Length: 579
Image 1 (cartoon, rainbow, N blue to C red):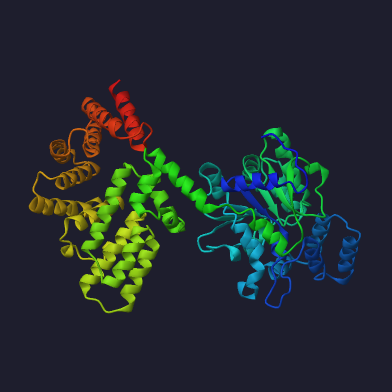
Image 2: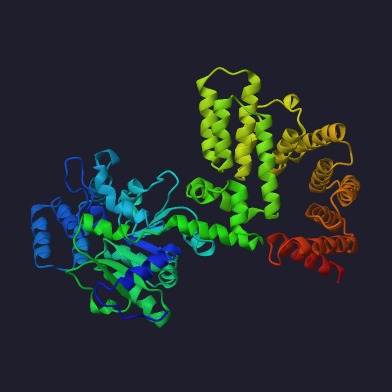
């Protein structure tokens, strides 16, 4: 990336940073200034600056040692050296830790809520990972979802490495210098800094350092409430920037208009100036937050296009004409994204599945007022809200047992839609097997057990669903063919291939006759047969079946559809066996 030349107050800087934030390419890096903005219920500042921290610690020492430390602070001796002296002067490690606990381990009830505004503005940038040098819980208190937010201390090796491989999927705070809950590992003195920033092979926190270096190289950091006086971190930043030259990511800092950065950071960290601390700083940070609704819609559009569809046509069919407004709900957006990312089907199949879901719910509806709310939540994929409504329904009134069964079934469906099979299984187990008299319910319950790996529990339910369909619809019906396929696939999982093959062939024959030889469901049957033949080492038959499935899919799906790509990959595996 080529470094640009910016003038002070140049709006181009902020526009570039906003673009990076919208693309989730920024890591907010939070320093002591954010915690120092927090006050207690009496309006008193809670957390100290580094200099004030050293003064507080000094007052816990003997008089002569306290005087020595305070004198050193007056002449602005190196803070890190002073911190080393203080730790050495304490009579015991435990006492030293107790004092730090008193300073940083504060109860949330003591905090004036409005004073968390700056920390909340950091979260409003909507970047998954926030790194901080602070030891306290301010970012925890300010998180919009504290229960769902992850917190790493410096030793979270698995999480650090996983984040580089898979990305950060949940809101996460990384306490790069340690956390008050693991006080023995806090980095406050030279020995702690060397354990993180030292380059020796046996450095205790080398995984953390490697992860930090990777993020500095790959992401743009935005420093908030950070003074850049930490020579160890700044040296690391400079080293990474020098290593990558003009190709390093651009880093930014929110800087008071009367301050300037050290010349060593020129072209490595770009200042964005704010007029004053307090509300002006908060406003500046808020001005950078992304238009998440626009970003979310763009992501959904790309996923739909990858599946070969027209986004406006699909979304209108799925949610109605006001789909943009509906997708502004975070739960709706996340659940639709999950469906689009994990589907092995076409967009038409997704629409069919939603219609089928609505029909199932209608068959097991509760009282009119409650069901109307549930239907709306299901329609908008707000499955958490579905469960809240049902739980309230179950708690608030007396019900006949049949209504309780219906309620638990609808909850199970909501979990199934979110690929949360264990919770779905917990719901269906409220309902006795003898009460399952509907083919669709029986099939759903079988699927849940199968997805939980309980194949023996699923088998009688698949058999029951097939028996009901054969009786009501007859053998030559598309829905009956689906049950033949479901049962055949289950026998394959159980290794009972001799039972699976005639069922798969029967399903294929019905689908070719009723749906046509080039229907997606027909392709699915050929795909299932290929898997069956592969498992029984009939590789030529497996090849012929997969080849036929691909020929159909190439006519009904776009070239890069995930289902088609997967089928081609399977064909290559079969070809290797043949060769």
